[in-house]
Length: 370
Image 1: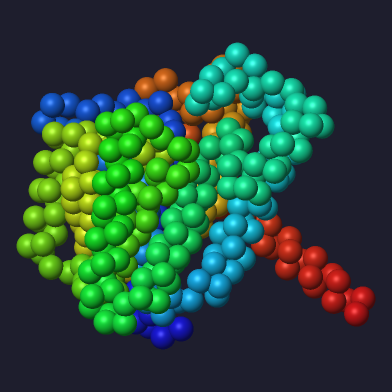
Image 2: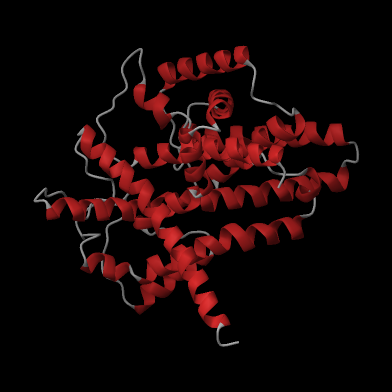
């Protein structure tokens, strides 16, 4: 990999690292609040952390691959879908174990779902749901994002392929594609937020398709460099204004005010973070954030387990907090918030590094007998 490509990936990884820290922080009962003119929580993560992930997802899409559905979908299934199964299948099979060791209890509301012990039939049902993009094991609760990201990319590819069969003029194709995705996002928004009708992992998939396409436009069509001081300042003001007026969004439930505000806040927040990422990419902070960004999938998958381990460690020091709580029970205490944040980030990083080293060691051991 040449230097320019390495630098390119570095600042993109910093964007993802910044967003994944926002994801982890959002799952901690932290002491931060929104104030009338200082919407701290919205600015720290609430307005942008998930939507920026979707927008970044469009950075690496290529027009020719979007119009080759078999190759594109096969690639995504071999990467994202397979990784999802690696985590979801063990998590589902260990469901009763989570109850036995206290990671779950039968009284807590886990996002509208109460835990109970499963029999063989329920295990089979839940595993089928995992394969059908409908897995919902609380300890992997944040992984809804990866399901939606995968479905949105497949949807965007199918739309692009269909349009490519009918429209030969590339400029016209881009306009029609943008119009279809924008209208789709409007319909999705109004179905959820006006009519009150939401199909899980369908409505927000339509929204995600639009956001991913925005990232594609920024990087592949407009070729933005994210280095203009005045644009960064303007985008920062846009983010601040929308945060003050509207607060945060909840894309897991497809909850946001309107498509224009969602688009403006997502694109503007990404520009600001990208601008700052380029400023720090060669420093220690930038490298640490880039590391988090490269491993963001694993942090998203395992940070709830990190919270549980932190609670267990605290109990050894006679600090009793509810182990069954899915959200890190920091009780709005800043030191506890920082400790849980550290565990939520560092446990996945250490875990995946140990897994990789273990695989290498096993590989070397097997080679001895060949």
